[in-house]
Length: 88
Image 1 (tube, rainbow, N blue to C red):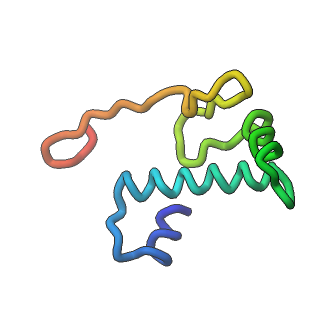
Image 2 (cartoon, rainbow, N blue to C red; image 1 turned 120 degrees about the horizontal axis):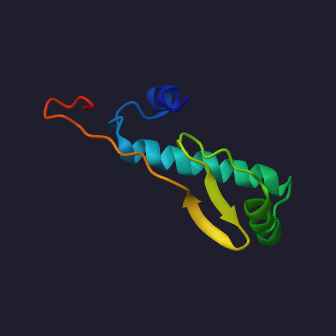
């Protein structure tokens, strides 16, 4: 989905980690606003973050976000990239 949006809306920008990160942030923000309701307030937005299970967008691990936990992603992916640019 993100690649298709990139190609339609911002094809002149490189398809790289910065673009993907920004799109993931926007996707997550939209989820939180949707959960906050039709006329969100700061309070309803914060409550939506603390009580909604956000999908994590393109992340490989879930989000850890609650009233007492603002960690974000709960893990990492480690890859080794060979000199030719392929994953080793």
